[in-house]
Image 1 (cartoon, rainbow, N blue to C red):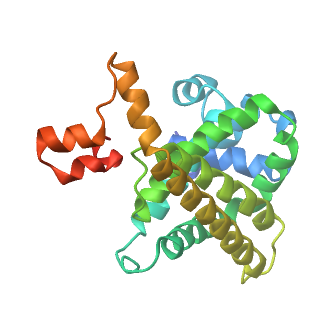
Image 2: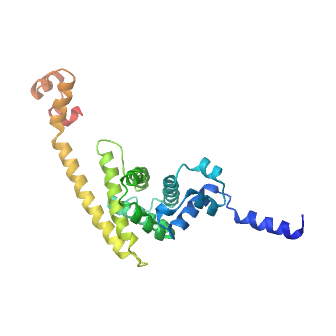
Image 3: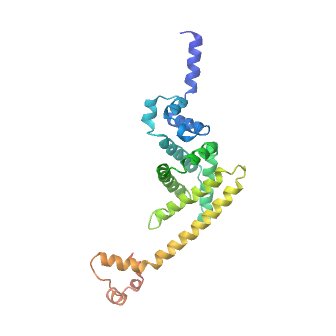
Length: 246
């Protein structure tokens, strides 16, 4: 083999990314910034990523799965940058910080995401799949902000976070100001609205506690004990509180 052939092989080898998953993600986003989503073939992505179709298939089943990998890549970047600096701040401030750092991490892919969401906004199947990806992502974003997502209101918090993020992203995609002033203002409004809804849900849950206690008793095939009888039998003043049965 001549020195020239060796040199060319070294150049080609150096150009091939060592992380093939990341190479495929980057290739798809580069193509999405230039072409409509539905015109991008998996063969185009494989070629741009310098991987074979067999390697692509081993790593991802579809272009949508590649978007899921991008989401996890951004998740990791945000989570690795999370500190306890805002631990004493209100929940809204902590979530605001996490989501703004997520938008910062997405900045290199903004043009691609703008075109992708324009193409997919009328595709219900794709939107449903992206909603699931976003739910998984926001579970970790809320955890990074110190927000509990387990318990009776956990699903409401998660879906609320997805809506806050999705609504804010619409503004972010069109916000070319380096300060992202419009994005921050929109995120603040969305978080305040979500905060009011969650507070209302918590109030409703407290108010409905007696009904849930009665319903639980009926499901168990017995009549609920009157508070006076329970206090007499147990000698426990807390028995007057229906929430203590939850």
